[in-house]
Image 1: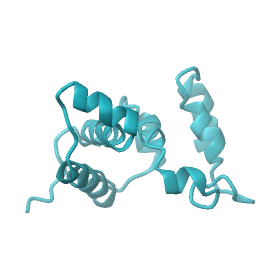
Image 2 (image 1 turned 30 degrees about the horizontal axis):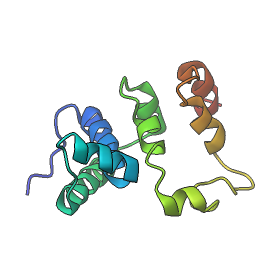
Image 3 (image 1 turned 45 degrees about the vertical axis):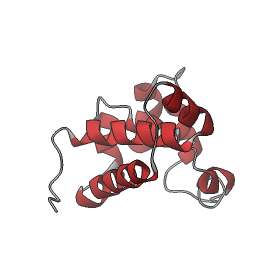
Image 4 (image 1 turned 90 degrees about the vertical axis):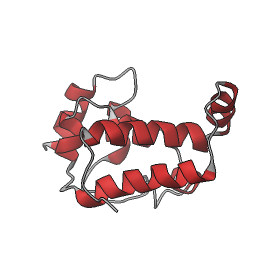
Length: 125
């Protein structure tokens, strides 16, 4: 098994996150099926493995994600995986004294926000 990072690994991570969302969301699943791009359990497993491999093998930092031209943080946030979205402990909403203001950071990556001016002060405080 080749464990080297793919070329343009941030682009690969972005594409895998977007496709994983499409496959895990009922509406997205139906749209993919109608478009002739059905999602199989083996594809979901492979997409999950790709994302995990990239996160595991990188000296990942928030600065790397922020500095990328790929909108990876919004793509990951859009996954909205039920156990994480619904649990305030897992989604960092319920932290009393967080190191990073996750709700504010997520807001910075909404389509209507100017991510650079809104996210930079959070990360470089």
